Image (cartoon, rainbow, N blue to C red; front, side):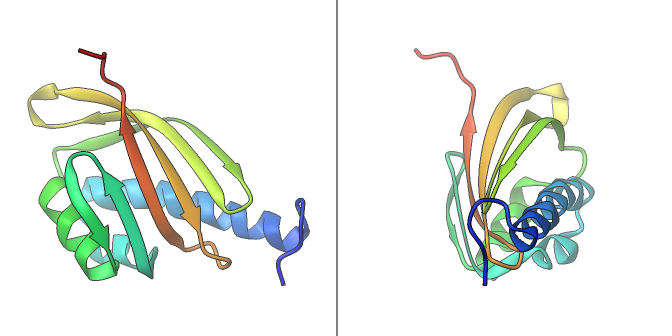
Length: 126
């Protein structure tokens, strides 16, 4: 099914996954939670320090609906992809112009759907 080391199917799946990751930020920033849900595997799992563990599509969408949407937005700096993994660096800007840099590490299904991600925020150690 999925070959090792960059077979055409793997490359196409990774490329679709990159598109889905980019779209996920757009949907969250615009408050399109139906669009966001369409990118998620039904068994998606999300770990972030600013929310409870999200387990399953419905729960992840509900939790993100409380955190995301205008005027908050993601500024993406870099997307790095390999196989079923994608890392994104960027800045999350909330109302009041508060901003924090982040890294999201995504895992894809074999079809390029978002199976999960883990967010890390850049904060100076105390």
